Length: 520
Image (cartoon, rainbow, N blue to C red; front, side, top):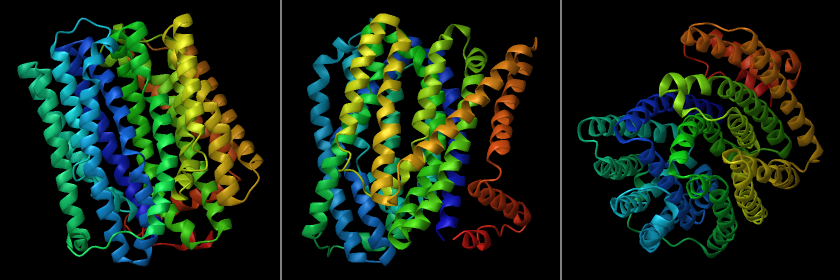
């Protein structure tokens, strides 16, 4: 059942997020042509600032999802009802707090925005605040769908939201060129999406509508508070690392640079979200796995997920490095291309962030939020200090070097240390051996791709793009197969693929647990 739900969730997320990316690219191109690069910069900058307000959530969501795994597995309806009621009360308060903090920030907006924009800037920011607050209305009911390994339902609703919203926003841009209406429509659809998911959760879990609900027990409340305290640090650190880039760019280089970077960020972040949805589909299954299986078996599954993690990100990193520059030229024009050194750093950061996925699944599913609470603060401090110093000395690339320097502490210390110590009871050197091996393989792939694409050129840009796309996909595949084909993890996935191909006509591979049970 865990395998079936994980594969189904991952498959749906993959397909739907590809559609989301395609719709987003069209919408972004029209946005640039109708409103210009400065409004694109404002859009990216305000999204960054608003992401800071997510700190107010304090990590209550992940803490509640973690606490839902056990009662859902045991069908403890009273505990589920109590947790969901507590979650609802918290999110209603958070929506109000976000509004208040947002309005307090309002007078300081022009200090951050380094551009000549009229006084509508204040009203625009107010709309962003309303959007952030609206995101908490009814959204708490997503958690039970997610914890019950039905994330594909959230994905299906979200894709409907994305496609409909973007189509309407495109029409607004074309016929009105009005950025304010563009944002108002987004707020309306945000509320509608949450309402739809709320109704679906009521249908799937009708007991959520019960009026007779007990308060959560004191021991559960204390455990949630402890995890939330740890997650506060992660929330603050996460924003300071990923949410401050546009603010620093705007302050030191101007909002137009934010617009240029936004195009790269949109593509890279879309790919990251696309892949993350695949791995997030495994989180609830891993949570169920940890509470119901042995530690050794859990570790065996982790190694398989880590191989999958590397395989996907080695290909994705190679393709981004090879294709993003020619793609931007074809998509919106050569004037929007950033220097190659910036692209190199963006790819390095993308790979390092992506390779956290497999170990991060086990960290979140195990509820390790308190133990490493100080790490995000250290990471974010290094990131901001290094980024500000380096942006003054070497420009835009300095900001991303700062992100790289700060990421090292997470990739090579906090994530593997706590998971290997507390979850697997293994020596952390095992993690380093595998990580470094995988890193060398992706470097070999990128080097081989660079040599081939430099020496083979086509006069036709589209033909050249297609050739580069094929090369950047198959080179990592070939390198990985040659070097990893004898590992247990590779053989496991090889047999799954064979099994799927054998049964694809009958659509029976979800029910065939032969390989899965064999590897237990």
